Image (cartoon, rainbow, N blue to C red; front, side, top):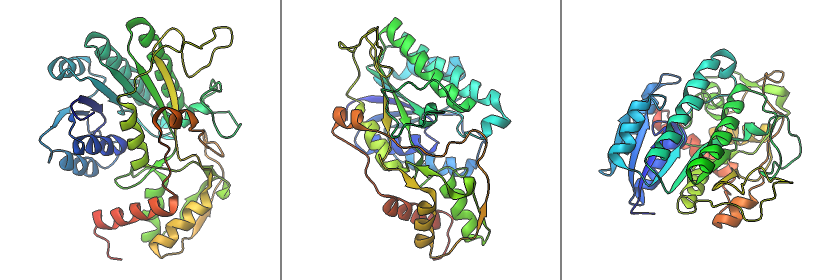
Length: 341
């Protein structure tokens, strides 16, 4: 792994930053693409990038992956052996307000990444999908061997389209591709629009926190350090065609005609939202006030990842408990925003 050049998109973002830092610390050469959009606080994005720029083996490319000329130039100049696509328009609810942003970043942008891998062949393309792809599925835990054909939001639909686009390119051009369905990622340097960040900000300001579905939510909360460790272990494990694939009874997460796979990456635990909030209250030393609200459009009551296939492949399963991970987030938040305990 240490001798490879890896192209990571979304390096100013939450997961992309953590992955780039991990790869750099292990001796890899990292090419990072990010448009540094103003979807949320640009100051936070620049602070992430500043840490990456301390490594001599980091090269920043400030560009939009939906800009084909910029993407092609990056592939042509740096010839990455591995590509990890994490750049995306994130957020489930924002897709109700600005749907075209999702097609621009998540579909047009991903097509450019696929085209880059086609014209400048790579050993492995890894890309972010989402647990939201399971949509209307209710069987728990979510298994990648299940069909996931009923996404409930445009965000989820664009990520599901990424999986299908990757399959076609893997088949046509022999690009080994691995799609990862992430489950509720949290941790230091997180996104300000995500629940843990919002809860922390409001609790410290003495404001009530908004608790949707009146607290009757369950999530597979996954620590960001576990996510990027899982990705790093997959770098040198590109898929091949599944010799046991049966076209009469097709397994949806592998293929007999393409070097292709889909994996879940989550903590493999279904935690109650109110327990998550309780842990945050303990770490902050403050009891929150709650606004108990109904379920939001496009949301689901529960998520839970079956990660057996990831574990079988890599020997690794995310395992950081929320009691530890939430504490690390609170420590980072107070330090970054200079809040005295």
